[in-house]
Structures are given as structure tokens and as C-alpha cells.
Image (cartoon, rainbow, N blue to C red; front, side, top):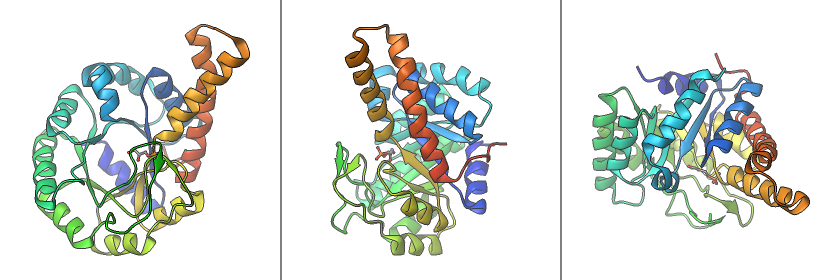
Length: 281
Ligand code: 13P
């Protein structure tokens, strides 16, 4: 049976969220796992398609698997935001624990069809599937959270879950990927309406820059996985810039050891925001 579903259900029942962090390389992966161990938190480590395109699913899984096996906390290897059914299947074949098929930009019927085909393939191999409905805005550096038609439509969410059997669902409630241009405005009312109709674990995307109070309110309303990405690579690149500016050219190992401390700080704060400290079993 999949390891992830009981973790998400436990989080849902106990009122915290599983933090899910995007990583692009071994340094970020190590920093995430080390911080999770210090906080005794379960954690998800997730690759976006840009990272998969650069390295391939088998290399990513091969790098992560030994680190996951020796980790002192549960670590779930996840494929994030794949728009390709084929990439999801490849990740399943390579040993990922969980995949996301993001058909949120497609018409509903096509979204349902692509989630269903990933679910059929993944469930036969005990792997979890996350779908998405309603759009999470802003794939660039700065999110655009204005407007309304990107919000999850409750009947569509119900149909997608009922017709696909997805294990978890990312729902657009006004969050955006990347840094926010102003204060994010989350639509808690819409989240409550979704939760009222669906018992499935819900996923909050765009975790970078959402005030802690809003994240925790959305957790209380039913979000039980929170994604954080931009804050990770931003801390990494900024730390490298600092170390090269202050120390000149130093070995990549030393530069990245410095960067890891900074990434761990970001991860620790996010874990505390998710209220998942001490929840590793
Ligand atoms: P941020 O980059 O805004 O933290 O969002 C991450 C995310 O939602 C990945 O799926």
C-alpha cells in the first residue's frame, strides 16, 4: 500500500500539513532532509518537470533513494506539476512514491481523462496521484493573484475526484507560484466549500510568501499538504552569491555547505508553519 496516503490522512485528522519542498540538486535535497530530521517532521521532496528534463527520472530517483532510506523521518519522493502523462508513468517506473498530473489548464473533460490514465497506471503499482483543479497562477518569479476565474469550481472538483479516484487534489484558492507582488488574497470561503463536498486530502500550492497565519488557517480548513519551491532555490542562489562575493572563488563543496545552512533555515520555518514538527513516526 502507498506510504503517502496514510501520512496525508493522519495530517488531515490531526490538523497539520505535510510540507512538500521542490529541489533541483543534491544540496537542496540534503538540506531538506536534514531540516526534517531536526524537526522530526515527515516531508515530501518534489521535482518539477524542469528538473526532470535536466537530469531524468532515473537519475533523480537514484540520487534520492539512498538518502530516503537512511533518513530518520519519512521522506516521500514526488513528481510535481507534470503536464505529461508519459512523464508521470516514467516517474512511477523509476520508483517515485507519488506523482502529480497537472491538467488544470485543460478543459475539464481532458483534465479528467489525463488524471484517470495516470491513476490507472499508478494505482496498479501502489503509487499515489495528485490532480489539480482551478489554476495556481504565476509560473514566473512573481505571482499574479488577482482575478477570480482561476479559482476552483466546487462541482468540477467533485467530478474530477469521483471520476478519477485521485488520492489528493491541488485546488486553486488564489495562491500563486513565486514571490507575490503584494499581499496574497486567499479565498477561504471557496476552500471551505470544497472541503464541505470532498473528504480527499487537499493541497496548497504556492507556499513561498504566504503569511503563516493564512497557511495555518487554510490547514485548519482542510489543506493537508503545503508546497514550497521558490524560497528553496532563492535561498540557495543567494547564499552562493554571498559566499563568492565575500570569499572569492572557493570549491563548490564549501560554497554549497554554506548554502545548505541557509536552505535548512527556510525548510525549518516552513515545517513549523505546517505544524508538522514531531509528527514523524
Ligand atoms: P512556490 O514556488 O510559490 O513556493 O510554490 C511551490 C509549489 O507550489 C510547487 O508545486
